[in-house]
Amino acid sequence: MQTVVSLLLALLVPATAWAPMPRALNRRACISMSHFSCVKTELKDKELLLSSLQDIGVSVKVAEKELIPVKGYKGLTTDAEMAITQENGHDIGFRYNGQAYEMVADLDFWGQTVPVDAFLEKLTQRYSVNAVLESAAAGGFTTEQFVENKQTGTIEIELSRYVM
Image (cartoon, rainbow, N blue to C red):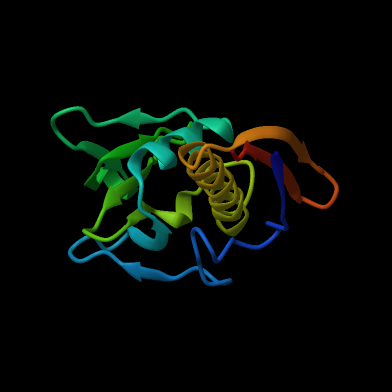
């Protein structure tokens, strides 16, 4: 007997089931780093975060033993587990705060092709999809169909599992 599970992930806004985020940026100034902002996320799994960043086409450096310095305004730096180098010389970092990864950057020098909110929504959507696929695989499901609608931003995943 085959059980088919069809999931429609309407992920135009961040998915609350897997990686909830408030609609507006939850931002605070990092202590002793006046130009850096720390943006809270609910992205908790390092490997899922890394693969999600790569999936959205971002080149990422990952700290092996020592943290990576993330460059900001006037040469200021802060340390992070992952860093995205921007062409303008100001980096974007992700560091673990004990509960989740937070994005660390000088937002005045944001150099991505999309605004910060759109970048985080895209990243959160990909993280959610990867979390669903990983969880489904661990539960014995196989992916039958994966359809991404570029117009609406929705993703439909059809999973199946044989039950005896």
